[in-house]
Amino acid sequence: MDNTDELQFQDFEEVSNLLSLDPDASTLPASPPGEEDIKLDLAEDDEGVQEMSKLLDGGTPTGGFWTFEYYRSFFNVDTVQVLDRMKGSVMPLPGRNFIKHYLRSKPDLYGPFWICVTLVFSVAISGNLSTFLSQRGDQTYHYRPQFHKVTIAAVVIFMYAWLVPLCAWGFLTWRRGVEGQAGGYTFMETVCVYGYSLFIFIPTSLLWIIPVEWLHWLLILVSTLVSGSVLVLTFWPAVRDHTKLTAVATLVTIVILHSLLAIGCKMYFFQTAVHMAVPESTTLHNTMVTTQVTKAH
Amino acid sequence: MSDADSRPFFSALPEVSVSEEVRVEGNISMASAPKDDGFSTLDEPVRDTVLRDLRAVGTKFVHVLYPKQSQALLRDWDLWGPLLLCVTLALLLQGGSVDSREDGGPQFAEVFVIVWFGSVVITLNSKLLGGTISFFQSLCVLGYCVMPLTVALVVCRLVLLGGSGTASFVVRLVLVSASFGWSTFASTAFLADSQPPNRKALVVYPVFLFYFVIGWMILTFSPAQ
Image (tube, rainbow over all chains, first blue to last red; front, side):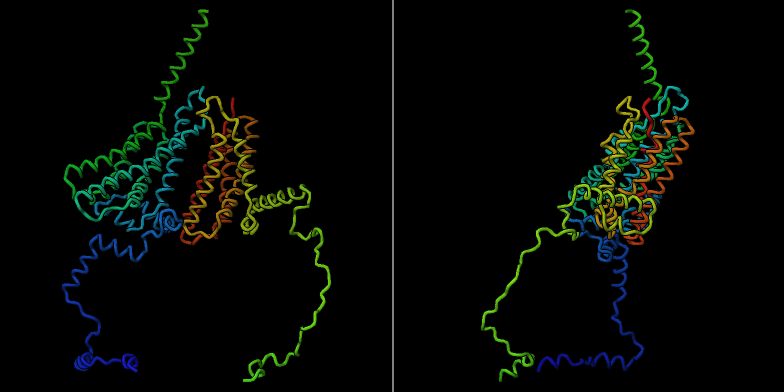
């Protein structure tokens, strides 16, 4: 039948002739040198790396956002990777874009979520401890756990960790759409970089227990500088194609919001003895007024 | 082809004709109630039912006290124990410094939310990371392992009856730290095997944080003056 002919081994006479002429010739498909250079360029291009890693790691989430598997794809990280990302968030090196270098199209939600939770409790607990330590000399001071501060800290920090990346991502996507550029960050990557950038505030909040005012401000400066530069280095490639004014304004806003969070936390949770003395004097004044009033009667 | 050839297997059997009617007699009524066959617990006294559940809860408490790989907590999970412990914890944490409602300790609802919502979040976390333990088994383990901390709270309140100076603080600190370590160790003994090996630390850390927060709430309990 006809099929059996096609199933027979087909001998390519040309190849066998060439091989007989030069037995040591390579039998792999040869590409001209120009094409190889182009391939290398593609590999160094960020887009190429992103697409290749997406294909290799299967990082794109499957299913709709209402399925369990969708969220499982965001927890596809090992201990080593999480530690690596946390390390990268405190070391802003000029050549390294956090998203491109550490995330590589595998943003995770484990890091941001648990860093936020830890930060909430560390800020609340350290604030409580620092209030206690700064008032140990006062005899009338009675220790209070101040548990309501946990709720406040949780609301503030989680809102920051979700709303600010939403605004940043929305703004960048809108600008990208207006100016017709490609290659932006996804929402999950933005959330991820913001979440990891909050990591440095955990040791900072623990160090804020020491009730020395200038130390608090120094720590705010250092931590805002470090995490702010990580954010700036991450978002610089996304805004450098915009006009100079927009680019600078965007980056400045990001840094200002970040420092506002740090300063706000410090002011509310870590009031030192100077601030606490003010309500003491008003209560004294009130008791004096009431005693005068009762004496008048 | 003849019949014998087409039915080679059946040729050895005797021919049976069922043309006549065959009478079938007998009683097919079942016994009125199966006595003590273990399947129906509808007729037993209420006391037996309650005691059986209490015994199950008690066995699990013992397993937490001496944590070793046991199937009782995992296979026969129940949520009575965690509920009991959570209510005890929340009730004992009341009566703290309540001169100002804002500055006091955690409210009853806050303790409940932290324990239950925290357990649910940790369970979801371990499932998302690829754990093989089921949802309720994990809730059961995390709830039962709160027991050392509850015992520590009871002892702390007794210590506070004797005074609230530095000595009592040191004693309470040691007590709470020991029970926190015990709780974390017990729950990781039960939960660790169900996790992929390169993610164990990612699963253990939230458990550590959970018991640390509960321990903090216990340690900072200060009685009303």
